[in-house]
Every structure is written in structure tokens, then in C-alpha cells.
Length: 42
Image 1: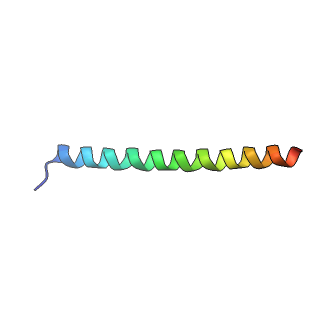
Image 2: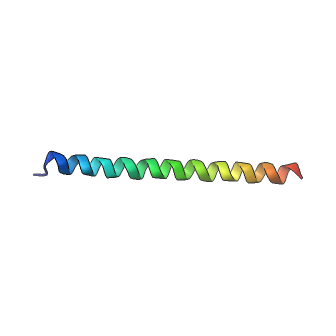
């Protein structure tokens, strides 16, 4: 049986990875939008 500290650490890692993935997706979407806007300005 896993201890509470083990579960908290596991949940912490899952939350960190989830936040990192969301931030990466947002950054990529923002970069694509900026590039498309820059290409559209010409």
C-alpha cells in the first residue's frame, strides 16, 4: 500500500507534467498565430 507522501508526490508530478504540457501547447499556438500574422502583414 502506497503511503500518503508517495501519493502526494505522484500527484505533484502529474500536475507538473500536465501544466507543462498545457503551457507548451499554448506557447506553440501563440507562436503559430504570431507567425501567421507576420506573414499576413506582408
